[in-house]
Length: 420
Image (cartoon, rainbow, N blue to C red; front, side, top):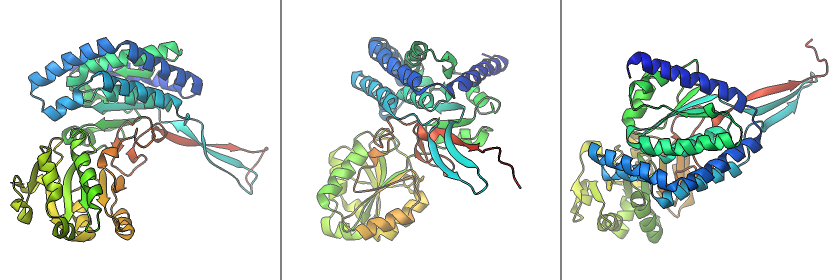
């Protein structure tokens, strides 16, 4: 497609989305729930076609030279598709956020004022290789009364199209406009640049992906952005950490799934913990097949390799972790402030005052105490699914679920009330 074709194509998507969003804004909760349940049934019924489409994407990804971690993000199997179905049903079962009264009060003037949730309008979601984002993002936008334009990664093109067909089948079944969920039907990168300029049609852009994608979006977007920066997640083993808890949590935080944004990328060990327990946390990681990049005393642990300066503050998304000794909780806080991406950090300690200090003095979107960073996930927060983890500070922060995809308006009632 040439530039003119792309511009025309995107203009058409935008116009259809804007038209659909006007209808969705007042669609009854029952219709949206019915659409999501019908979409879930369609995904279940389409399992063979979805897996066949994913096999084509996996072959494309391997030919493109994607890493094992990125291929893992791309891969769908029966259990992951079942997870998509469960996510759709969970979002369907949630309370509808649209029209919910956030606050209400009376004024001495005689006015009664209500602040109620309202959809944002049209949301553009730009993401990389995880095809499940297609269903998650579409479901959350629909639940919150927003139309959505999806632009998935070139690697997940066929899987995303197969899932899109199921979502559109759900819209049809519930009598909702098909323009409510659309996908950019080309791998051409010019479509992304066009999306970022569509202020007439798109109310907010949500980028999900690596530093390159998010950086491009933030640099070029004229549409407001919910930033989803890298997941440079830290886990800090305090001097008063419980050893069994620490061993269990550190291993899970790094190895459960390395390709997700909640995977721990840096282990900080208090010198007091190291004096008491030695290198056990690092030894556990090495035994599990993790490459541990470190410095100083920790290099005496057999199997570790010397860290480069840029290994701290790096999102590996692989079986690699950086590790460093720090002086107490303040040392951990100083390191995280310097190298973190304000995504998710976890402290392992039995001292509540220390945990409180960690919570109070860090400003990441998610802070955890004695829990794995892999819980940085909208589903695990009870949101059914998420459209991303917002690391910025405006409007949405942390897991972005249906409620975070709404704004509000004021409904003001009087009795022929006039202002003196």
